[in-house]
Image 1 (cartoon, helix red, strand yellow):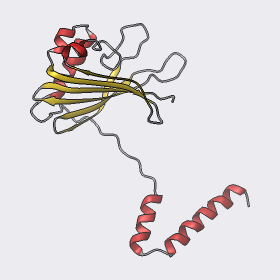
Image 2: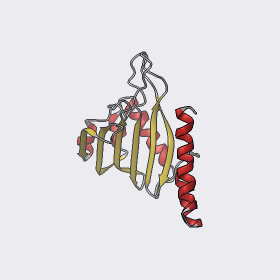
Image 3: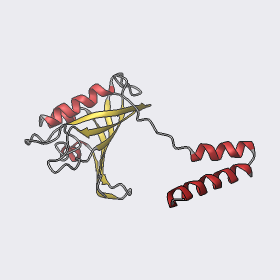
Image 4: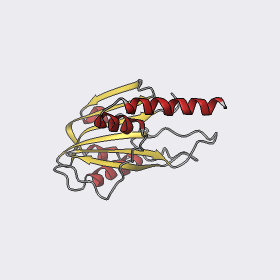
Length: 183
């Protein structure tokens, strides 16, 4: 019998033996944990409303439109006076790199044209980042910015996870995380 079949039979035997020694409820728990399930990605279902802001996505779109056009005064008008900004790069192992924490409009102004806050750098062959996987909970909107293409060497550009917390229709907190795919 080939080694792969022996291994598969042994695993199956161990699972059956474990089930035989369990109560019905315990067996269901083992089966539930042994059965892989896919976690569906949340999908955007139209305009997201955050508590106190009927169309939070319109505010977020205005932010990205203004940032991408270099109109930072327009961007800053969307923030509360005491807004906070946080950003970092995060590897697949969860390690944080290049952390930045800012408070107030004047500090936030310094990062408004940075990656993760614009849809494209404007350079030839640069990716355009599209919003996806939008979720809303209370006054918080979370989404991904995913690139529309691969690098010329075939490797992916890093996506960004963005979290926006609103106070009314003003941005109270903005967090941008670059999800490093190669660490």
